Amino acid sequence: MSIKSEKQFEVIIEKLDQLLEENKQLKILIAQKDDELSLQKEQIEFLTQKLYGPKKETLNGDPNQGNLFNDSLFSEPEQTGDQSDEDEVITKTERRRKKRKGLKDKQLSSLSTVDHIHELESCTCPTCMEAMKEISTQLIRQEVKFIPARVENHRHFQKTYACANCEKSGMHTPFAKSEIPRLPLNNTAASASLIAETMYQKFEQKVPGYRQEAYWNLLGYPIPRHTIANWHIKTSQYYLEALVAEMRQELLNQKVLHADETTFKVLNDKDRQKSYMWLFSTGKYSDRAIHIYKLGPSRSGSVPRDFLEGYTGYLHSDGFSGYNNLPGMTMIACLAHIRRKFYDARPKNYSSKSVAHKGVKLCNELFALDKTLKGLSVSERYHQRLVLVKPKLEAFFDWCESLTAHGKLGIAINYALNQKERMMNVLKDGRLVLSNNLAERGIKSLVMGRKNWLFSKSFDGAHAVATILSLVETAKSNGLHPRKYVDYLLT
Image (tube, rainbow, N blue to C red; front, side):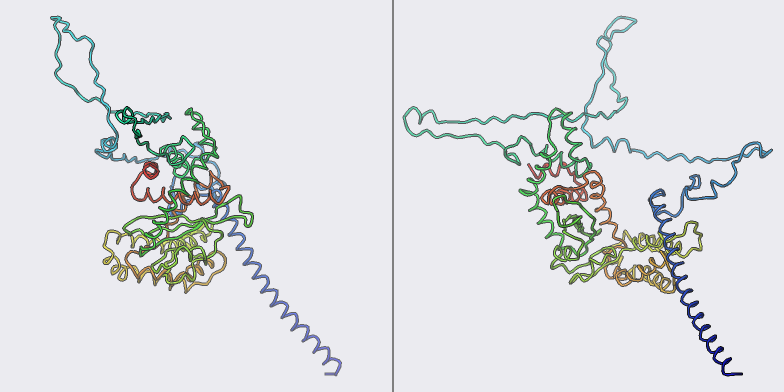
């Protein structure tokens, strides 16, 4: 081979190596683009499902209910009676719901009773025309009557007394005045019951100020919305914040707590787009149920660190990083959040062999198994979990470690493995639970109200929201009527 041919051969080899390297890089780039495209498709399907699909995370749907996302359902030809010579016989089995005996009497037992005795004005015998005597009174039916609310003007008069004998003798005449119950707020005619009702409507019934304004106008006593807001702020500052501070001390004495957070808008906060409302609750098996809402400037971990200063028990939370590095606390993860990641990762037309669907089923099995231990004592539950729950929990995380995936399934697997250490901490005490749903339900009360209130104008108003909502939710958890409880406090 000549020298010229050898040089051409070397150039060809060099170019071939370059092309192979470029081909390798392009394959890597294409694989990355495919992963990104696959993730975007999953995100679109997930958001479409969230927007139009069912909200409950259930596995078995109603077989008679059509699925909006089932494309084959709408592509099949319409079936008519002319296409078949044989009539189709559809057998539908109806199960009648068994009536609960005594339910009506139980519902009526808590109501005040008014008896109506129906008599005849003149009762004479049609045969002999003599007066007939009563032989029995029989209860025919019971009805529940609604008495609409009304507003009354209660006037309080004060009597003054003087000593007539001292007045006659020319001595200093002493005076005495009768006591009058105080109002919660000065310079207003609002009683404790009226203020409590406005709080009940806003924080329990989720009625915003402008709708309350129209409601009170219909009752004949107009109350501007800014007056209602001012009542809530002042009563919180004068009376209720001190009580919530005592509740916080009692909450920190508990062994198990739950925490969650959500956004909350304060209009006068010019430094940030949104603040955060935090919730701290006692555990499921605590002696006292306490829920305390706390307005925080951000989602930083400094808020729970300051609120829970000195606390050394167990804290249930989701996987948010703000709960990391809280001193002295043992963190407990939430299996419901782990399950949700796998639920969202299921493909559009998943099968029973789907990896994400299997993750959901494994989490369901853990919840079902732990539910059977609900009636046990704390000590018994602790020992039974070590025997029954621990092997299944370890098997679940071993299964997660054996998987490699991209997209939403990869996110679900990584999230589960990141929460493994916290999730295994649930085996350390029988008072712990598998999920943080207790705090999730508590924060939902604020979220439902936020859809109507939208925001607080000032920081004082936002703090009043946190204070009053803490008392309302705590009262409900302890079997008390929120309006009656707030009325009692302000009285």
